[in-house]
Amino acid sequence: MYARRDDMVLRFGEREVRTLTDRDNTGEINAAVLAGGLQAAADEINGYIGGRYTLPLPVVSSNLRGIACDIARYRLTGTERVCTGEIRDRYRDAIWKM
Image 1 (cartoon, one colour):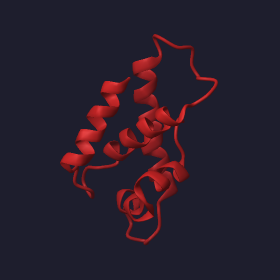
Image 2 (cartoon, helix red, strand yellow):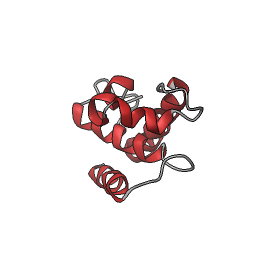
Image 3 (cartoon, rainbow, N blue to C red):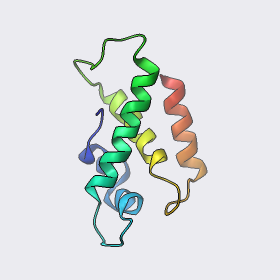
């Protein structure tokens, strides 16, 4: 994976990450849901860069970590969390950067 829980919390705040992942209303970040979103982001990134770089990358830059967070945030929206224009724009920007 290109980003971790701490990266998501640092970028969006604990409340936002909890809102994205707390499907059972426990008041806590759901680690399994978050891991699924981060893995989906990593898979998407690998699809874009796999033809240009040998995977796994030996070093993950802070820029790529941020891109992974933006993609994961977008992927975690849906039934419980509405995708806002800001979330969609950050996702589109992240894809464009790759």
